[in-house]
Image 1 (cartoon, helix red, strand yellow):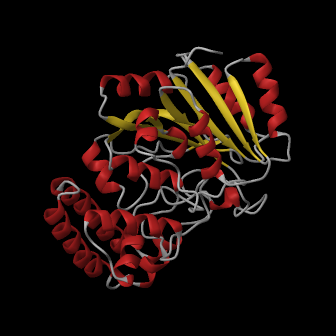
Image 2 (spheres, rainbow, N blue to C red):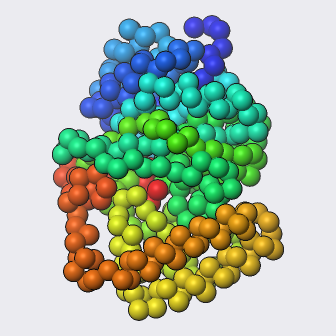
Length: 354
């Protein structure tokens, strides 16, 4: 392949032999074919590279880059960014599957609007263990709402992200290799500082829940990577929380992987969490009005939604709270990751509430 492709799809893979064939097959079914696929094998020992070579013999658009040691997902993706040749750069995790029209729709949006740096989309989670699919995970579509939501959680799923690659290069944007979790969230926030972002309402990716991933089984605390990401975003907006305010912020942030209000601090502070959140929300509104870094209107709307969520959760009975069980297949899938290799294994997919 000598002509520059329109898009490069980068896939970081570690011990991914079980699922990577399905991930690559989903790219072969894309309705637009002006692409290259770069798989960065992050030091796998399970036959991942052999599976990629098998696919590459059938599809010349697939390239393999092997790292001699496991360097982590962020580092592997950065290698892909450096070597990619496409005008646009899409990410797909090695255990997920792109929908057939994903790239066609995302690139159409990016090409129509040069001011966009990043486009994501809705995601359909499915569970290997239970052979079930869950509710569609949808994210805000407009830039203002995404900026506000990103103060609380990631508004993109890594494997659904497609970037204007030349903007990444121009502004030296890369995945933060010092983050064990949430490097995709951090990069999406960095992208917001140089341009606009968006999400498609349509499903662009099928998101696999399985025992080898790191995403679930985690709960944010003040020392977590996701707390560091939130602190950076809040500082950019113009507010620096106290430790107690940060605990409140983590406790009331929505999460796709657990029922709202499941955070230990939320439960611990059940009697006062609404008042603590109200005081914190007042500080956020003041900072937004002062700095203009996020839309005050979008922030007010988001905080109103959180206030309703908190009230609804507090009105639920203790029995209802106890029914937030670890067995729901795809919405709250703790049981689905209870078996298999340790969720802290190096190279597992990025994890944080999203």
